[in-house]
Length: 397
Image (cartoon, rainbow, N blue to C red; front, side):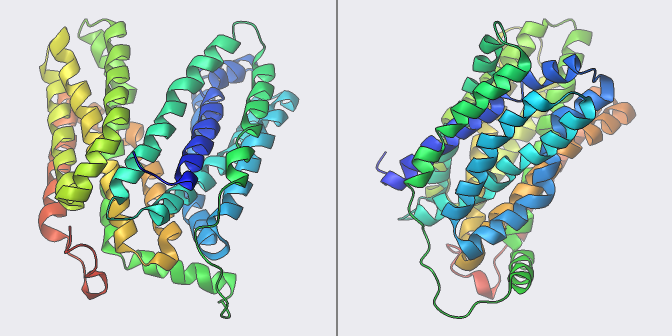
């Protein structure tokens, strides 16, 4: 893998930041919330509320990084990763915990669009999706390391003390971030006011078909994925399957997703982003149908592998398509908008999936989601074409 020094520094920064942040999510956060007296729906709200922060603010932070530079906003995001964990020691009620989770979510709301825009600007030679795939492989490593380390620390430390440890670990993120160069030269001409710049960026993103199509399809994919995460354990128990099989199912899916990202990203760069996204959507649709059709045993893990491979095909190619489709001046805005739509899918997935299952049953809901994904694949392949402003989009890829 021949990449630049800033690319590896950014990978290291994101791996450290995400590992520490995931330590504070599971299993630590539910344990801490329960110890404070939270239960039921309010505990679930505490666990998920940081996603809502990104839902509303990712586009704004992406736009501001377009204006003032990526490095400055990475330093601000790192500051939130570092300082917020030290405040958990002073939390005494579930309501206070909810507020601090909202503020802590600013860290990932900044890092999400800004790091992706930075990677896209570093990419050379038509390998945007592959570079995003390698970068997100490091991010996936954080999702693996963080929960395991938090669980180990909880064996000997109180939850509030573990959050303090998270703060100290997060301090290491400053080292690679401070060594990062700025990717965009400063403009010498007079710039628009911040408000006018934000409006122009949103207008540009709104007129870019790649942003809304790929963001919408990513949201649809996340609705399907989070429906599986929320309801597959219940379905498995009702079907007489071991809950251990369900845990292994999700682990295999995440492993296939993480390891497949760089190679599926390279496929997207070579085959084209639209065909790669379509293939991923079709694989995810097939996986949903197989979940309810296959019995227990080894065959039960086939849809898990397909689900992971589908994500590896869809997400790097979708982000690369947006990077190629939107103007360079508003790249962060584009990444923020698709990040917003992703978070919308994560939040809406369990809710919409629950309604569908209540109306159609588990198998019927999966069939409906599968059909919607197939329609999405057709939209990508047949209906989406760049306008005159986007002829540089690699012949519509």
